[in-house]
Image (cartoon, rainbow, N blue to C red; front, side, top):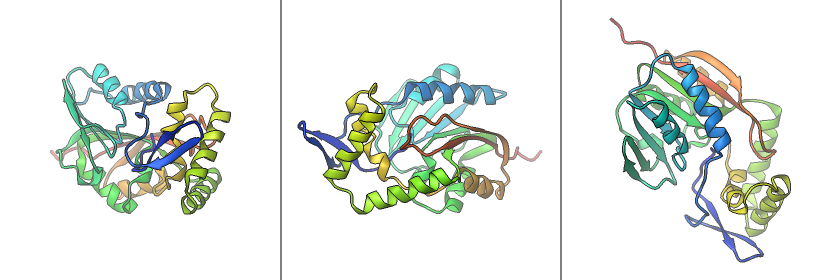
Length: 243
């Protein structure tokens, strides 16, 4: 999912207030976890030994992949994660750009790469360094289209005027559009409407191809909310080790 450093917390019954670190606990969309997880498993010809989830959230995808790959060790990193190690899963709270954990056979990222604050070229260089020879990068990232351009313009404008009032407006709109979803889940996602799309699937693909990766598969991801960018799932492979 999209991740950022600002969170929202309930403020009585009148609305929400902008705070740091006091949001309701983030919970993954399990339907998306299953959709993404099944595609990851389908795209691999052999089970990975080391897996990295960039922007792992509450670790739901890590747990899915741990079940699918019983011999793998898995690492997750997220700005808002609770650092912990359990069984074969290790989660670190921090910035992916500073992670130094060796090479991975599989790197996954679900709507997290687009918000990382660096150039697309620098992000691609980091991902390429972290992939083992022959490793796979499987990510879900917004692509270039008029819808995403308009949404990004709206988010830029909202950032300029952000207040408790705009937070409440976003939450009211979300509750009208997603009346079947728990309020805490919507509150935890209010800050998404302030997150800027900095990187696109096409931009990352081009930068990674310059580093020798190849594109293996691309498909549209489900679009489930008007406030969500339109995404693509992309599968890229690192060059195999020279013999």
